[in-house]
Amino acid sequence: MKFIIFGAGAIGSLFGALLSTKNDVLLVGRKEHIEAIEREGLKIEGITKGIFHPKTKWDGSRYDVVILTTKAYDTKKALEEILHKFGKIPVLSLQNGLKNEEMITEIIGEEYAIGGITSHGATFLRAGKILHAGTGETVIGELNGRITERIEEIEEAFNTCGIDTRISTDIKKEIWKKAVVNVVINGLTSLLRCKNGELLKSRHAEETMEKICTECIEIARAEGIGIGEEIIDKTKEVAKNTAENISSMLQDIMKGKKTEVEEINGEIVRIAKKHGINACINEFLFKMIKAMENVRHLG
Amino acid sequence: MKFIIFGAGAIGSLFGALLSTKNDVLLVGRKEHIEAIEREGLKIEGITKGIFHPKTKWDGSRYDVVILTTKAYDTKKALEEILHKFGKIPVLSLQNGLKNEEMITEIIGEEYAIGGITSHGATFLRAGKILHAGTGETVIGELNGRITERIEEIEEAFNTCGIDTRISTDIKKEIWKKAVVNVVINGLTSLLRCKNGELLKSRHAEETMEKICTECIEIARAEGIGIGEEIIDKTKEVAKNTAENISSMLQDIMKGKKTEVEEINGEIVRIAKKHGINACINEFLFKMIKAMENVRHLG
Image: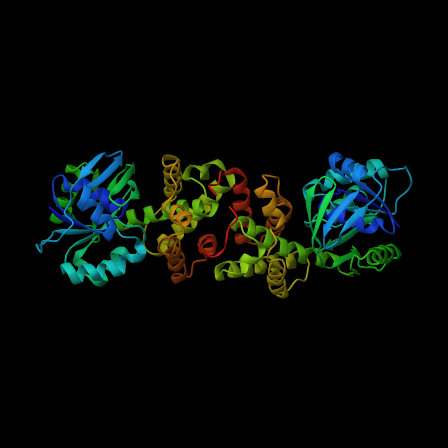
């Protein structure tokens, strides 16, 4: 297949590298990163090791799918660029947040939107060099739940290249489940400035994880998404399995970079408000992370 | 008058020093601190400057009042020691927290309990040496609101020694007002690891201050304490006036010492529960500070 990776940061570059072994892959990303790849190839370390050679210049030909891997706060701008440059083309979002598919629908068109999540963990080491830090399942699906030819083709292309992937007939629910895990783990580790596994070392942190999940379940249900209490165990399991990881949000805070807190924690709060749900803990968590962006902290 | 300072930390030593110029003052505190005072006198720097010579050994004579200045988590133990050593004697608490007067009543007796708060700020620099960092009003009062002879005598003794003091006929309300300010400022600065004034630099932090105050007003009212919305402005004013201060709770966290979070934030949560009030933000704030005690944070 022919894939465009749009937003070749850590995750995008990892997928691009893996897919490039058996597919035509065009990477679109920051100038410095793309130039390093053109000079020395795309270096992957960690779980996957090697130097990969995806394309970095568009030859004008038609591609099958755009895999969108920008930060969620850049989705709108990215989609406008995609539409402008490549025209109407299927877009598979593998991003954080709850609004990416809605934005693809709005900007490119409903039939072009494909949902996805991935549990792979990757870190951007420097221009041209990515660490493949964690492995896990990738789930993709059509928003209407149908098993289409294109979704099967993408699944096969992914699996053939070593990206363990399954199709979901309820991808919105999968996206929500990942979002809830992110709300809790990114949110609390940012506030407590700790690695993911530390959340399980404090009874009070664990109780708070449960309470945030419980609020999220109510918010999801109001939105028509049937998530149950199993999300509590799922969240704890992710914290346990990624115990030594520093969440992406905390990494951004520590680097003084913009976080996805608006698209992760903020979005849950907005959806709760829309439905008149009192999401007290999520609101406080969101506001505290926003406050962290403005106050000088003492270390 | 004859004062015993029980728990001569920063605030206790400051009061002991000031009162010792015109009163018989006996300091009871940690061995190292007392020994340093016996060797070189009690050194005060900052707003008050000088070397003071309170007594450090009890001659067995009867004292008029114990000024209790231990950390709030040590109140019970302190009162048992006071009762054992000095017998039934009036005790004026100048501590943080909401339960000190109740404990004096329980352990020494109702007629011996005197309430108080102070806005002085002091820092323990080293054994024998205290920094007088901030100045402000001291308020004392009988729990039943009466203007008694002893409360007037204490007020006069304090004022004569330069401790700006007034008598309140509703000292419980004054204690609650200080507790709410502490709940907000100690709590939020600990969570955000910032100086007091930083809370006013983030719209989200300021909104959260307001919400915590609003919960506290409801909790206070359920307890029969008539605090109104003026506490919101009061809290912001304190944050502004102490902008460069590091709150005592955050100081304790940064030194790895036990905090008064149970007696400040925890107590508000327990009182809310007792009255069936949903104190969601206070509960979350309390749990996050408790969690901070157990998780390794990354700086």
